[in-house]
Length: 196
Image (cartoon, rainbow, N blue to C red):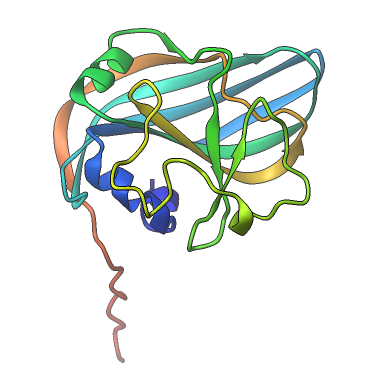
């Protein structure tokens, strides 16, 4: 969760305005030619309006079968924001699957996140993250953009893959928990050092 909440400044409005989110800190994806897949375990949170607290409400698995030409492997993190309680309940109601044309916004790994769009359009060679305009992160907009009540962001941790869609990802709720709020520290305090 910290790689999105503390290190990606552009996501702060989503943490502050979304009803909840599902976070997958590590998703492994790989394939060769026409066979491939992805798997990751994640957690589901409800968020409050100022993003100072989050409530862990469940655990979820992400499974994806990859079709078409696939070559390579990668490890990435993924976060799905739910715009309203209705969107959150739709995700929590059972098995949920993204449609074949679903797209994610790929974040760069630097502290001040700029985004590039990756999806069915393929990799955008020669375009830097600074030059790419992405709906949903434009600070000039007065309202955040969601697609069917959800917004998905990914952060590649390693690897290279010729295939970058989230279409066909299935989510299975493994466990719903007793709701316990967790306060989010906005700044990290150094731990005291004992002097001898």
